[in-house]
Image (tube, rainbow, N blue to C red):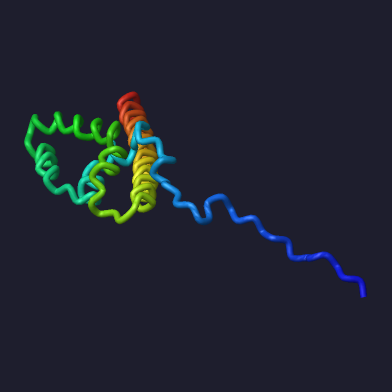
Length: 139
């Protein structure tokens, strides 16, 4: 019998096998964070930095709550970096990277839902005004 060549090809492992991959390095921490902008308290609670929670009292103080937009803008610009620097709740960088990705997805979805609701409100306002002025023109 003729011997055949070894038919079992050696499978080259992916370059990630046997190497520790720092997923956090693949995330650009300087980009805008929609999760940080729309839901800054999620980052504070998830990273267990409860000392920042008194800042959210600004929401309930009349006229001062206008300044709370600064918190949203700060977490929009620095939310990813905040989570990376204050990651007491996560055991490794891949969990931090996963949280950042999910946090940004939730923020983006929240933004789109808010935009859709805003659009519906505008449409109903236009329809309401049109019907209101339509009734007055019949008088």
